[in-house]
Image (cartoon, rainbow, N blue to C red; front, side, top):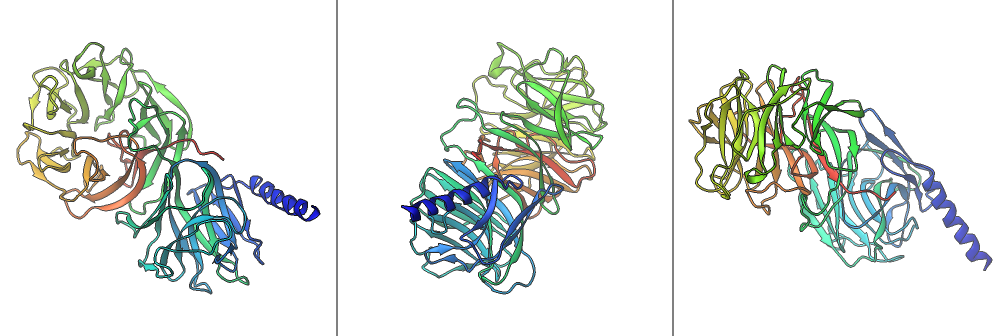
Length: 510
């Protein structure tokens, strides 16, 4: 009885230590398995990165030794991050990555997605407490040179590991089920030296834990997940969360002053400092049902919005404009639905997508003077969808996405609708071409090919990608859980170095 009591007290002591050591987004961090040398975890608030130090003989056989930063979490989730081991190191099998663990015991069932010091990557697991470790090919590992992005997803009883080199789409390298894992688990990042007499060091950044929902979930009708406002340097891919809310907000615009972001939430328009804080509501007068289509004019003086009118066709989305500082909106489009996406360079016209055949699934692109006059149809699809039109900073082209080729791809045309040219040709469904202020780059959102080309739903694994403005091979700059509302409107910083966007997640149980 005394031995049992001592063991229980030791386990309780470990739990207390972990509970009292929050770091970054993680509620606790501690050594697991009592390694000979102590490890540590620290958080850099400036770039929201983690520094991990860990010793330990290994994460293998029937017990483990390593340093672990984790949260308690229930249900389905997606773990994504960039990882790098620092220095030359001692053992080529030193490792860093993601781990999902049944508990903090050194012999606990767990699933690990790891990259080793020699570049080897592996999905490894212990099916039940005290069992010997396994990997998909029984110790035949996969190598992927320069891999730094690791994703581990829990989908019911199935665990899926995906990896990518910088700039590439994630590739699935393994999945398994049958692990004795409770509904509530520990999920987090780890470091192990694979040598009991050495402490190794690594870094992790763009660390995201995203609580997912089933694919059958409808973002409009079945409730909402929380939202994160993020900014990203598009050239190094480093992300920073600047604001979070348990409700839904969408579609940030970078304000002309370079210091604030504008976004919509609950039918209203808000601004918030890049440094965070409390959002300020913008006065939009009688327009109180604003959606995620809001665009700032090139001269920085005006804000165009889409807001719904009751009793109108297709939900009544109507385009208005008002001073960027706020005021009573002036109606531009009487016909509905009309969904704003751009201004002309001279600020005299707005560019939008609209449905003009009642109850038809066909949407085309139009433009109309803000001072009045007839709208001009620019695309003439007889089926499918053209959407997301945005004028280039030089005023020569409109960039947009369109299903004319069968999938949703990026296109451009001249301002009069001529010379319609396809720019992307891959297997993804590509939406919302946002041109950088220096007219050199396009940032856009890519959905998997399992999504209907005409749909841009909430709550999917999506990518942010970057390509030259005249076309060329896109590269991935961000992996996130989002979709509708992530980047519907122009969101480049004035210096053409960064973009703002929204990602989504359910509550994490810490």
